Length: 484
Image (cartoon, rainbow, N blue to C red):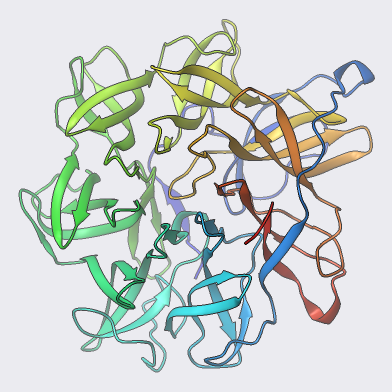
């Protein structure tokens, strides 16, 4: 079920909301989630002087899951891959949400690799946030009840780690009522455990009244957004879960490094038509060293906003408003910090190249390794210029441990606008992985491309529409690069 409204604060630049595509001229924009974007400005005309050839496109694509695929436990897959992200691990396995056609158990969380698609958990009813459980025919949920609605779209992508554990958000039907929570499929034990459900008790927070999506590392640790009954009703905080224990990472009102206090951590919520309200972003990140990254708004400190990495419980500003950017000028606003196992961040930020001007770009690095611009609005890409970028979000992992960064871009060329997935290597080299209109691996073409890819061991997710493909295949989750 689609959310009815997006509320609470967004970065200052991204205030010109538009639910349809912007004109195909050199008007620029940032993509916020599945079909919502915001205007930024205008690039100069695309001319020969602005054309730059990138490195050759990477290896071919391999399709791992596609619309119409028959599932062993019934029904056919309908992943709507250009809307719903897939996340990949080092073995080349992807995790994703999909609806299922032809059966009452009509939705769920799935994994796929070159051996096929496997179901992790199935539900039924009218979808996440609808409070309509259907016939309550879903799989049993830990703590009682059955899984009903699952949540699709950019905000609710299921996270997967290298062990094949998968973190997902879902509704549960029990005793005539629908609630929701965050759950972890543990691959070794082949079981689902509860991370947190509405009503659970967390020390110093009281009973949880709201829960949002989260991120997962290879140690099975989870960080996520939540709200407690003992907290200010406008405060969305960050919690940590490990082996059944809940603890605080950061809360609104806590002291910020360098002075002041946190005034905003989870600043995005979605309200569904049923009245369900879910905090959805920016989701924090966590790496295998146990470091946790998050965006923070601050009152009374040296910075108004910035990106923090917490190491062994000690918070440190990695970058903040007013700092100089490697593209020139200073940072204005930030989206979610994506954290790799080397302790580096990638993020999309609004920045002021010169006084009175504002643009947006992806940046990567750390205070130790230094910072680099990966791709900015109006930068040359192949035979055109970048006019659209997607904001950074967890739990998608586009930043590899070696520092390569995979990004979606809308590119204005002399012949029209096309979507691309590109990789900015740690040395700054920009390579195009796939372009809208390229051949799909099973026939047809690559259509609209999902804007939040993940990258692992040189393999990246390519989730897209596939117009012209045979046998009614409308969309597919694919992987670029070599597969085992």
